[in-house]
Image (cartoon, rainbow, N blue to C red; front, side):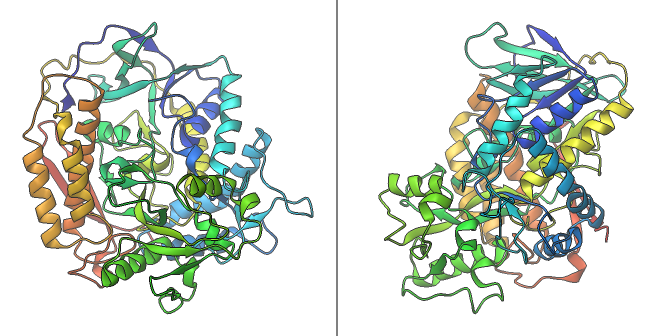
Length: 537
């Protein structure tokens, strides 16, 4: 099944196509070049406009004295609430330190302590200080800067900016051998074209725009995951949408990307307060305000619901070096009329991170030959039901390197795409975007139930009848959001328990029989199927 689009009017080619310019995509591209492969790097906006540069907290790695990959593994498993794949977690935590050292060798500069050593801090769910940060709260921007500088110095990486990837191209034997894409605006390669490659890597980041409020940038419409779904790839764990507990609340009408108040602020001593001025996390979890994100988000939601208020408060007034440690957050607060040195910060949960995605193995291979997936678009199993803070940038570094190594060792000759003119095509009207986002926030947000999820699914079915024959960026994006929203709701409805970032008000307990991964696929006629598999422990 594919989206309706014009016939390709131009062709590009490389050994490897990498879709996305965040930490996962850039790392994959650089490592592919180290194997002497030509790379076509496709990015939806400007090359530095992905989610990576918005990452405030940092990168988690066992680099500090007394720390170990085993301890990092234990914290990751606890946060993952019984659904982590042990092998994937082992890869993440054992290969993580070397991946960070390689990033530093590529030019990334992290904040230093007075001793001259890299400064390490703590975030929710971690029992040791193991978070590297840069520019105080601008870690993602520094990681992006360093990787981009390396990419721009390499003439073997061709970059196509402002390009929305539409669908996968397959050879007659079912192997992905390229993609169709649309270059937005002026340039030598305008309109719909096709790019051919011996391997395709999806690294398009998150899908936060499925919801009304998110920390994700506007480009995060899950295009890569939706492309993989339509190509027949399996997706897993998509019901586990992590809501960041402390997003700056502005007003009830705010929509789209919202300002994030990093977990690291609580790591430096900030405290959550309810509308009575009471600290409330200490009675909920032993780590209090530094409990795993799902627990903090749920309790904030509970407090908001009980008091019938739209937000809680974050008290950061005791952090003496706030302006130096968190310059980005300080500026964001001031821009919204709040002085965090003197005032409480209003916060509420918002969609932040997809712990699931396209199902891949330890080398990033999807269930469709020739198609690899890295970063937030992938489900490696490393995050389970709830990603541990600051494991996301690490995952991009570690698995980007593994994907490139596997591609280099198993690269096949270039195939030509089969004729797909008879394949079913669809396209939804852009007008469904806001109703879709509102329905997802209302019925499939922090708290779900059978009633809310069935109502959301009914709304999605109704919205899915609003078709268009006018291809364009807005229609392609909203079609992608529709497929992802449907997958999320289907899995959330099937999982009749509460676990990690999946909270069912009608099934509050975590059940041992649900230590399973829900796998979903779309066939070429648009029909869904699902199965449950046991977790590798």
